[in-house]
Length: 84
Image (cartoon, rainbow, N blue to C red):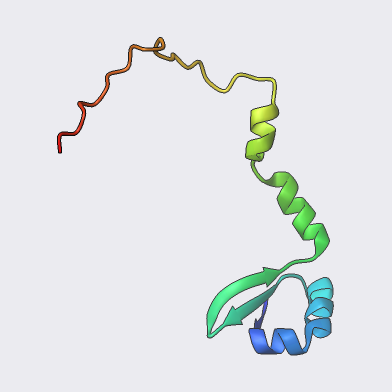
């Protein structure tokens, strides 16, 4: 994986994009710290499909995630009122 300082990545974005498509993921650094990775779209799609489901898909799914026992309304203990 090639490393590109952010200044070079900005100035030579077309080259960065070409290198990504031809050679694979490209690492971008800022002040020497790894900051981002540019990956080809095929790699991104593969990684996205292998990722865990999103919160939205979990909430909209038909299967039960857990059996929750909720206390009856009004049975929760209250904190005493603050005295000033």
